[in-house]
Amino acid sequence: MNSTILKIAAKPIAILQLLLSIYLLLKGHNEPGGGFIGGLIAASAFILIAMAFRVEAALAWMKAPPLFWTGIGLLLSVSSGMTAWIVGKPFLTGVWGWEIRIPIFGKLKFGTPLFFDIGVYLVVVGIATMIVFSLLEMEEA
Image (cartoon, rainbow, N blue to C red; front, side, top):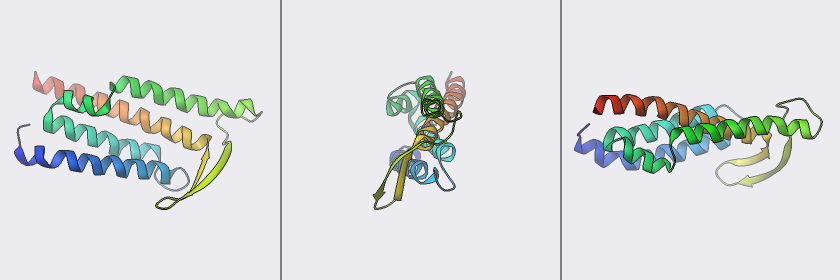
């Protein structure tokens, strides 16, 4: 797409989308939101960059290909579920560590559910961008 307005607005909007996605990820593992919706918003930021500047620019923003993020996310989600086995609980049982108070987020509890949400976030970012990037590359060809 060759739009001057889109090229000017894409980077600041993408940065805001990425910040919002991280907020929803961290806030949502105890409330509505979480890894899935945060991942969709992050993926839309990378897709916006791809539409404004080409897929190569979006891949540069992502620092690794979408398949890498999908794999890391799956590994993190499965390993967070297996952590419960180590302490003698059923698979995917939440194991909580500690909690801290962060000014914008409030109380943030650290445990396996947070790491599971981060894994879901990365899987959604990887899959959504992989699908849309392949469609955009077909369109460019």
